[in-house]
Length: 400
Image (tube, rainbow, N blue to C red):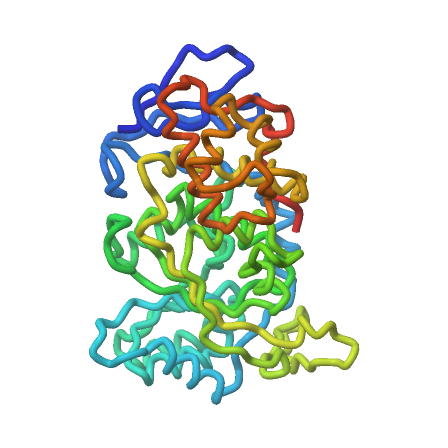
């Protein structure tokens, strides 16, 4: 069972606990843990972690206003809507999942989903579209629910009264009658939509913190994301060790989720809602970078095997920092990083994970990094598994 430990030096914080006597010493800037409630919602242990602060995700009133004014992409092609609906429907004999559609806008995709037998909850952040979506709801006798909120800004860090379109997940899920499921259970629901145009990478990082900490929507189980993402970010997300795009975000997402491309669509098929309240066709100009001319419809399904005895929602941030440290000098040898990261015998660790002394960071697959972390965490001959380093005290994710 994961338990809190007290009595560490004032400058050092406890960051990871994977069992009695298994902990690491962490930096001054690392996040602290509050008392853990006793009720088991997640099925991991007798306790589950409180929501952790998301690094650098503060939303002041001015920033919220700025984000609201940013243009959004919408599915307005009926052909594309039918294609997406058929993909999500899958085989008819499978049980239907509840679909949370993010920013449906004019509701073209919404109608296609409903025609294919789905039950949809439309989460619309722009009140301009609410009356039209409400009219659809009245005509469809319970197959559609409409809620004024923004899924991509759910569970903000800012204090104070939460107002639409900002929402907290426990209110949303309670109102929908959705109960938490163990991580080992099936997918509880699916999310459909288009990643924010100007905040894709930031949004990806927020989802990562939520997923690994089992907070926000991931308190309720292995929520599946089915989202359109830019080709540029998709390539980074799925980059392998032979690519220059391979980085911390690539590793974390590939360790956490099975990522599958469901469809590729030209950017010209999407419409854009601008600040003046008009829908305008998003044309692909010749000047666009080739990696900006398509949107990839991808499925991101959290793995049942993500969490183990040695990688948990309690110590996930140590895993994050280990990766950040390694990719800080991606051309260096792995053994040199280990000497800076842990007092555990580096050669013994390399032998256990099947890597040579000459292995570099770029020789490591995503699952190799997970195995590396777990090997260090389960080392029984060391009380302190990780060395404190000022460079590891920064809990902020890499820039956008």
